[in-house]
Image (tube, rainbow, N blue to C red; front, top):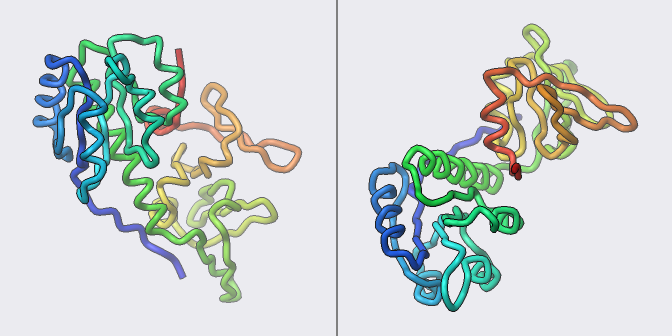
Length: 247
């Protein structure tokens, strides 16, 4: 028995919180040009925006400035019990490291550019889809062995999946299972928020990545490590999806 993933396209409800009227106007224009975004509020201060979080319509994404009078953007985040996805928009780079401690989607520097804005929104859409796929997806999968026995595997126990001609091997902490399946088919059966295709022959459990060195993913296996190559065509997509802090 296998499980399919169904993700429906959704327009993200978004708001802007920025005390700079010109910046708000620019972001409003960018949102208007971007498919998949629905602007439901634009505010010049965090205090003005509090009421929108009490409404029935959810806020999925917030474009947030850092330096504002009365309350900074980061102070504002500390007041929210369940903050939405955040894209920081700031004229200063110095807050970036602190901002990423709040698990923000991205950190955009003013003046804003539309291509860079699009890239941030794509990250937000991916993050939303990942959360949806995890919440709508079981935490386990069943694999049918040659004798028709069904083996229950928790996703957290799967380390990586490797292609082997017309078969794939599913590698776990204790053993590996060889099944008659294509890589594309198994990729579609696994939740995208937990697994990532890094090579035409490899899918890895993101949670089990120990480190990335040059063009290799390192996965710890007991007292040793498994080195998995990163395909050239997969590298950019992998790096974009990691919660990466770089100088």
